[in-house]
Image (cartoon, rainbow, N blue to C red; front, side, top):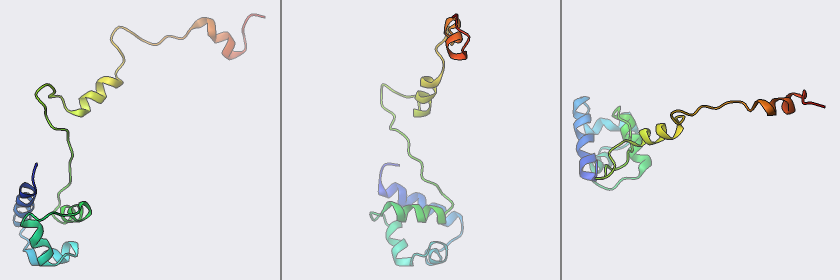
Length: 107
């Protein structure tokens, strides 16, 4: 979503889908009809208020990176590729150092 209008449309549709009237939002989230009406009309809203509304409508906030022309992989893929072991390489113990660490080095 890129605008307050899109957010307000999603909120309105979800509220209707759940069969809830604007006036009943007070019981779900402690917000008067006039306050909630402004949110559905696309007014700017604090993040804490938006989170409260989303909780009352059984929705959750999700943040994802914009899809640019040169990069289409989700951010999770970038983290996965960084944490994977390089192909063809594996970790081996340096046998000559084992004696030092376990007290059995040549005396």
